[in-house]
Image (tube, rainbow over all chains, first blue to last red; front, side):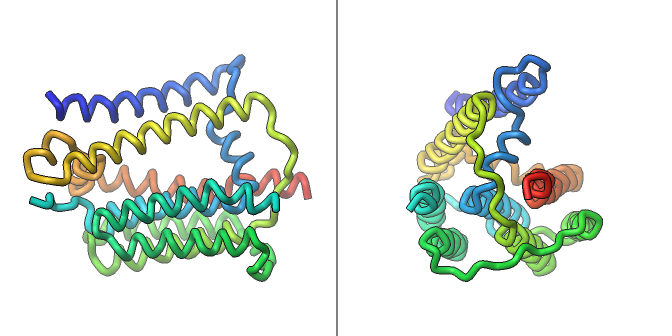
Length: 73
Length: 190
């Protein structure tokens, strides 16, 4: 049950993200699309370097380094 | 002073991520985030030399991204070749992104602010959920099954070829987008 709840949390986040993408592309959307937001915030070097480094780390984590951590006990 | 205030939240985010890497016993990952946080802090204080904008032809970027994607799909996971390609992509993206000239600083409109708040909320929610699962699940094999991290759930999928193709395609395409995003506006406003 706990496992299903945990996975459910991820699914909710994913569903909300997909919903935001769809809703933001409507003609009368009250909020900007993700690309419009990134276009604005990437004007700041600290923001774009932070996001790019985090995104790079996802590739490093899943393709190169240890992906699954062993349990302590 | 304004650049320091604007950089502070991002330095804090990098340091928090670096600390989580220490907790999960990944010191190299931690050092990467720490070094980037230090570079951003030095840059905010104006202590780093200004670098001229690099010419970035889209065709060369796209060809490089395509080659990287093919290599990452065929290279064995966790192997030397994958390490070299991912490192090369990261260094290239970081250098290009760092050299991008400061863009227009016009105040964002309400639509953009609302969008930024919504996307930041979803991202923070996902990160907190992932962090709590990671912390609760790290003690025994049983707790790990009950509280899987995103890595635990995605690892088997990326081990299979179709999953790896999807992951690599999304990762490389988004990186290409991150490097390219805003450049059109820079040209319009410069």
